[in-house]
Image 1 (cartoon, rainbow, N blue to C red):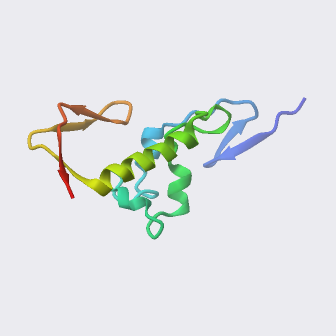
Image 2: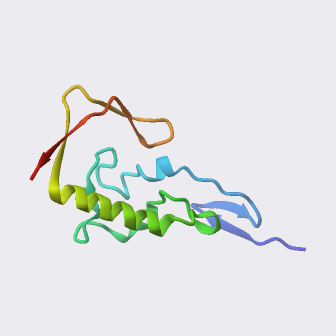
Amino acid sequence: MSRVCRRLAGHRIPAGATVVFSPYLLHRRPDVFPDPERCDPDRWLPETARPAMRKALVPFGGGVRECAGDGFAMSEATLVLASILTRWTLDAVPGSDVRLAAYGALQPEGLRLRAVAR
């Protein structure tokens, strides 16, 4: 029985092969995300977000193994963040240490925020 091969970025991928990717690296591609190391929530505004950016963001995995709570979590996070930021301004307290962890998330080391009512 002949197995169909596909090409991905110039490489032959045999049918049934397992393909693994790194969300950490995908989310930091400078050809997809302008200034990828900078935290910039405004990059997701309708006037600045590009279709390639939306396709490259996979915080909950994808395909048949995508997190079942993906849609709910994104909606809930948007509502919570919008509720907080309409009432408060959050500033890092001087001396707070935030660094990228090996798994690609921000890992606060004693991060403290000051909430100031708007």
